[in-house]
Length: 598
Image 1 (spheres, rainbow, N blue to C red):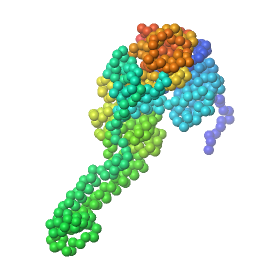
Image 2: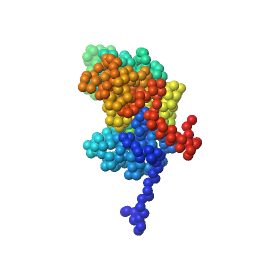
Image 3: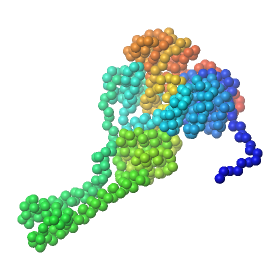
Image 4: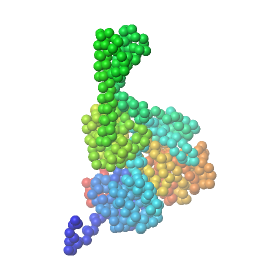
């Protein structure tokens, strides 16, 4: 039954639209439009502004004012629109944008917005974040220049690496050769450079001037053994023949030995004594004890009685294991007593991506999720991963998940506070367990690692944002190497005509702690890894390693018409962008002086 239709239907109200810097947006060209205001979008705006790109952000009016304020402080022009309709796209000047990056919780909304943008600007590069991987694989064929990415899929490998406590070794191709980045004791072959010193803190750990323990080479020294036991035939046998059955079998063996000695004393030979002892303890009735004296026959009855009790114990224990395993498989509960496993708290997009990768490597996993209807719960159970429906910070849930014998606890919910609480609860329950927490707040993560000693922390947006920025700007996809909370980025860039770096020596692009040049390929030439400092020429292709700030400075140096960044400072924007930002801050201060930053 449908709802009654009113006699005089009223048109939908005009969506709420607000815009800052409308006049400057109307003149924008070649800019990047970001739709959405999640954590990855915030990091993306920072990445783009560091690279000197002009950014317009369309977001919902209900967005946290602090997020809007942060976007504006980073130089982005903002359009507030509840539906991201045609008017908002016009205000963001989508017709002349070079790229559009769309975030959201609804894949249909993302696709609808992408189609609307393509109709107005077919030349715009589209970068979409979709939750449905199958839909994402089919969509690029339906649109023009379109890249589909997932923050969860981009960040999951880093969480898996942290969970397994393996060295952060990454193998990839750059500069025309296959290279390996990781700890010095895991990297062999040609030594191509020092990347970081994990013993230092903060930005000083990356690209140090001197020695370090994270290097770049050409060969991998074996693979480290995981501390987590894998499943297989040995694991199945260990699960079925648990401690109870082992004790019962040991009792049967002792009974058999004593029975053989008992019947040997009657005068039987060893073989007959063994047969009669086996027959009597198993209560099969094949042996003949009638020929024995009456006193010896009483002993054989006692042997049969003990054998019956122990045999029944074996049968009961095996049935208990098999039935409990079947029930656990049907209900998703924990089977037996897991050891050296991984506990994943939170089965959102990141959590289920981590679980799937661990399961693919045959790593035992137990998951904890508060929402029984979450999509990740169903997928985890299809993977035959035990799922406990409870809060991850619940001590009893952690104990049921086997935290006392767990190798690591991963707190990967969408809430920083919940992840921090899970980490503290896990440490209170089992101080020796390793904890990996997902934290967006960079300052909070740094203090947690130093003062609370919760171990490693990761930020999904920090790991994913560089890939979104590379896709939006049409650059080669960047390889991300985590070094603690920081990341090193590997990519290739081309020197364009009009770049302020043309004619300057290559060494000006290499700055200690910020960036380094791995290899150079002249236009039409071959890659030179042992390059000699020479003037930069148009068409040179450079293999670059840098932190986020350093890569932004390199890209700004190679951008046509830009100015070379001052090596004594770290400007986030071009001079023109800085002027626009100061004007915005002045106008904002006139409207809301309480929001003016210090």
